[in-house]
Length: 460
Image 1 (cartoon, one colour):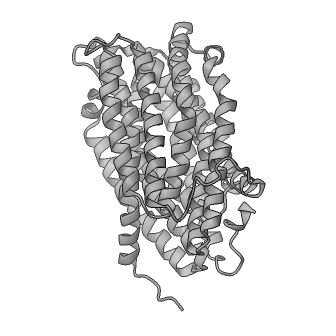
Image 2: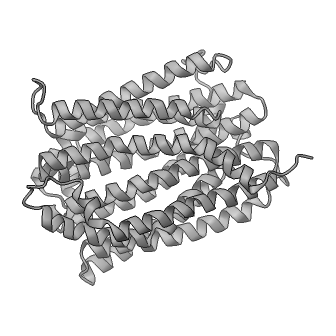
């Protein structure tokens, strides 16, 4: 009988695994923040176009990212059982499925302007967003490979290397952005295209560095041995677990994409304010994602060992840590909204005043859904750890779309609250999702150890 860990020991274990993951998530998102900052200094219209294009790219990316995210609990469970062969099968299958997804979504990015126009966006703004996407689309495959390799390293609790590679990517992105967006150091002034070139370069570099690192520090796992070999059993397992994860992420990302589209109907200044406020909210969200990823790994390991008490106690600690950070962000959004929004705008931008005014209101609304957002992302991470992804997908689709998006449309346009009303719809969707998902985890987690775990066998 294994002696249960204390809550303090669980906190130490989660933070030891989670802090580098939090740092890497924040650093990864800092790449997008630097794009937003530099494009905001360059031109407000360029900022609005990349806000639109970035939401569109990410909406397609997250479906494929679900396959990479599925790798983490499967590897954690297999490693807890000492099955390195299965670890290799899962990682290889994750990269194969990611390759197929990247090929399938490429045309949707390359010819995106008609789609954006059909969604009610300005013709000129849609073309500018398409200019960005026609370059950025080539970074989709390396970005998906990064997701798979990050998940593998996280599951094997080698997270500091992820952080170091991501920090290097941030530095490279800043340098190339500075050079290509503004035309510094003799380079051509490329605007949004320069930001796209920087993003692709960063994604390729990150994938190569992580692959080289894995070959050096994990020779016993031989993760790239016979990489060309197709493994139908592992492919089915990754696909079955990963597709619902990707569609769940799509439900949430699609909600935010839809809010960007609806805010775009209100004007460029509203869309620019939405983009800036969303960057601030998403940066805070990255901390919850890092903790959630750590919770996924810890839950997957507990399932592999059949330790129900460890799973339940660890989940309580992970939720408490996430809630603590959410309270800090509520205070920041309520006390310093003007300072946060102003960071993203040039001091002499003629639209600075109106954008800050709109953004201030949006951050107040964002404070309302911080706890709900923390709840839903932590519940999803814990549910992935125990191999439950299909019902969470349905819960997310219901909460985010008919409820969240519907409420946002009514409050924004029927009631006439504009961008603030659209964001209040996010409060509705995230609150419902968080409550239902957390209830499902506690309901299922109490049965762990009483039935065979489903994560590892799913790979065939």
